[in-house]
Length: 551
Image (tube, rainbow, N blue to C red; front, side, top):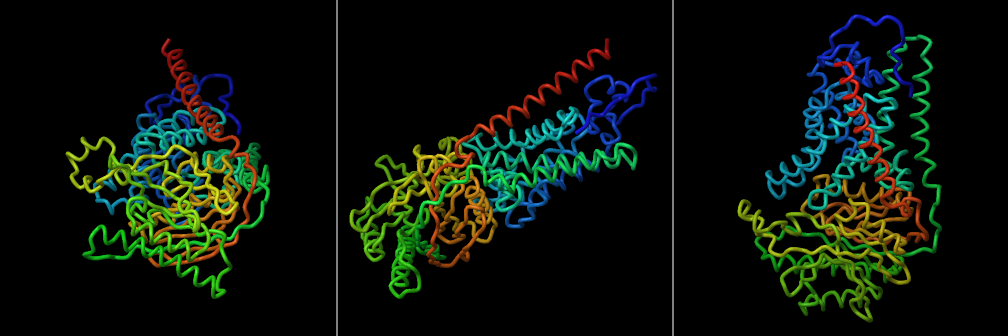
């Protein structure tokens, strides 16, 4: 990446740019360093074209994500947003960021409409807001030398904030989550999802840099610069292919796991309690069906059987009938079960839990879901929000988040458990693996989201987690999608949606952490700081340059 030189000699006469500054003024300061600076021909795009490019950026990122899966559009999305805002003032970049964010988020989270159009649009709007400072930041750092690096780092900073605030964050739609099994996914083994996002955004920025330099060279002596850009882009892509081999975990024997997807039926006029009992019975019946299939030789005998989140919404520790149903299923299977259930406290609160249920000793170790869904599993500021949205009162009990990693030992194997929404965040699976987890298990309940794309999106995140930690992963769902994922992110089994399903898979347990597991949030923090520092530095340099011109 080569800086733009202004040359020497007699200064040219001032030429007014579309931003109101003159070319000679911009050449006096930092803004001359990049072809995306104000005053440069690349910075004088018509506002309508900028708007269209910004919208195209959001749509490209949408199509890169599941259920569409056009992953190669991920780098293009980053390049298009940079092109849309490059050379414009930060204030003008804000509305371009809003267009790009809305084009992505409104259709991406349309599955939230099951709770109401207002909920869907409110969440999409809140997520869109993060693209405003991102776009302004991109416009600022695009003035610096080596701008592809700083722009990619800003993507990491934006996603880091979005995954944490407010209400614990909502990281859905990360650039990284479109890369579950691609040349970029290998970077997850070195620096988790933030490093994947950085690699995708950097590739897009380098492609834009290459195109700009190629057009500027026009066959002249600087024609080698585009070749350098293409070589750098190729090196980034190839780096992701070899990254998983660095610090790869070691095999530690094979484990045979049974999976039960009981399904959530359309119960019509059935009462809430009746529906919950039916769901519990469906999953117990699935265990009995699997046990019978094993006895008939259709499947190998499993070491354990996994059941999804909310396989029982009736607390068996307070309901004797529910406990008897689960005990009968465990006795028939003859192996430990991992059963997802709600555990209610005396004060009316509850835990969303996965419980190890042994056929001989009964319930044992538990994992409590750590990342709960706001307005779904609990109502933040309940007294305030229920005044305005009365249907929130239907969430009658608030779940309490767990605090401990989900490393559960079953049948001489330690599972790294993260329940449903947990998998979208970096810490739960990472900490469960660091605590000894050998196989990743994601119990989930997506019954409200069948055929909306939400299950595909969650599976893609799980696939990236498998690569990140070098372990096979199991998704077991109430109504689909249940799946088996290899450590390289490839899906070897996938259940149908909205149908009962049983399956048995033989997987290799893995021992030892990947580089990403060891480093934790360090790569994300470093990249975010780099991006934010570049934005601050560019702002300071630009202001000092203007002050010198005014003097």
